[in-house]
Length: 315
Ligand code: HEC
View: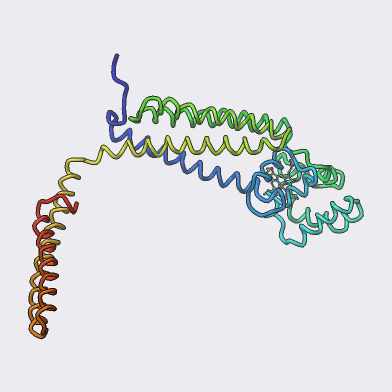
């Protein structure tokens, strides 16, 4: 049987192509995290992204309407001022009557929302053009609809499967223990499938939001592990190991030479200073004691100096 291809077998042009592809996917992944953040953050009324936000996105919020969830969350940025948000929330709380709608809410929607939420925009979003349409969004938020989940599921499966397939194809060229490779190849696909199932489960039972986040996270971690390891193994052996080694040897040699020069110089100075200082000192026992210390220190310094040039103790 022919040997399997590895990264060491492929040309530099292929490496460049592969690396740019992997880097683009890694960047796309970062942006997709940003997308998750901006679409879901703040749904529970608290700033930032939490499991509760995810649960509300799929299961809905029994104490929040779709309109409130939207202006607390992804649509908040479209409102020109915070007081406008309060006006709309108060209107929902007070029963969403038509009089207040006409007087206070309609002008806000007109100004901030109709650019997208009207048939004229061609964006196929819930229209906010009349009282009846807006009132419908003030009913209890039941979360993601099955048609919208089905739509996103098929987009995700088709799109992400391609990404995982091509990244996996490259990752196969890595040299790692075969059991680890087989495992790592499977994990992103399994977690993508689990993630998508978890959307539907969360829609029924909000606690499945944990499974959703866990499997989504696992997919991200395993995908990026494949990308990073592939990039690493693709380029590291290409750096000429022999020349790297000799550069290192030269550098280490220089450092050693300098350190031993320094040691010699320090000892010379040390002898000068101590002998000058010595003359000023009186008292035999003191002198004997100091002599011992001096001998010890010099002995130690000598031993360092002698080890340095080719000993391996310091490096
Ligand atoms: C720049 C275009 C744009 C503007 C302006 C905009 N929206 Fe949206 N809106 C969207 C898009 C796109 C979606 C669907 C994507 C999503 O759910 O995040 C959406 C979704 C919504 C939904 C959720 C509908 C559902 O299925 O639950 C509501 C409610 C909503 N917007 C209300 C508003 C309100 C209120 C304003 C004005 C303050 C507004 N939007 C302004 C683009 C816009």
